Image (tube, rainbow, N blue to C red; front, side, top):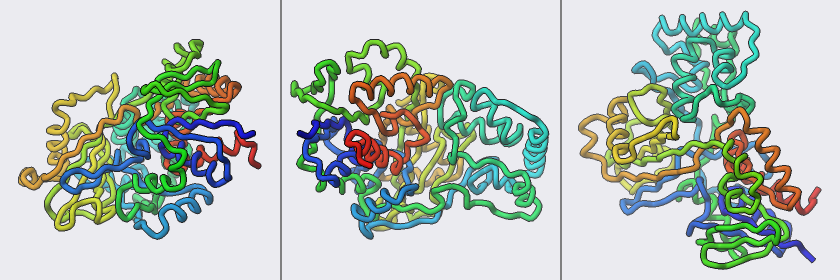
Length: 438
């Protein structure tokens, strides 16, 4: 007799698990989603003015052949492929991304500071204790001061000295001093770094279209508007806000790990989950009735003349992200936490003024704004704190002993495997694990 598998959360991880169960012909499973839509942080929404909005600047790229095949099956040819055109706005100028590879665009005195800092660090032997020290050890004082420190604090909204650096992997381009000197002396652009230098985007429907297309495969097992309020791990029972109760043999959780633990009877972990930190992000979409003035994809903003850390020219990803005609759209992301609070009553006005400050809009463009959309994502980035890995080992090892598997961006609580492809693959991986598929 098949074990009964329950999946909590129909984001990329939960849907990846559900799709793979269906793919394997497994029958005894159900997936529950508290919202009336699927996709989690990768959902998309269309407003009353005809603009489509994502929850941030998502792009689609892959590390896995399985995920590539799945996308081919789900999306077919209904996507647009883009070459990344990403920049940093700093010192009143555009610097191609990644910043550290393209410092030649800075004023000459700033280039000198950056190079001097790199050369000084090159002769040191350092053993950094946290992310802040790691930044200085890898990039030197100049690059740290001008970009790395302010940019990372703006994103993470968490003291960098309280973060580890073990998560970095392919997330940050590490300096090659010879290459940097070559780029500066010979005036070379160096923009090809990273796994997302080419990316795909759905032709219509935003990023959420990918995950809506899972529904036909899993609809007989999918239950929406089902919010979990309690998990009785002793009797293996999930209780929902509508009074419904479901038993399980195996439970796959894709919701934030700290929230999940608080809903269980595992009181021994209640204090430990305080070690799990995250930031939040307000995503403000701005729809403008004018032709788009740029072919850029996204821009980073490390300086304090605007509240956002990144702006995406979202209309450049697909012409169907706006109403038909001369419109374009921007997605602005503002991170916050207890360390870096925001005034939510003023954040729209501050964002519009910030766009003017960084010359993405003019004062006259205020009259051309026809749509503003705000999404407040409480759980945006799981923070790789100094104690994160030990905390996660303690929690996950116990959960798996009682047939609970927590996966995904916040279920696993690992930012470094939090991309869409990573999350879908975590869903597949956990199904293979519990069913012992080789």
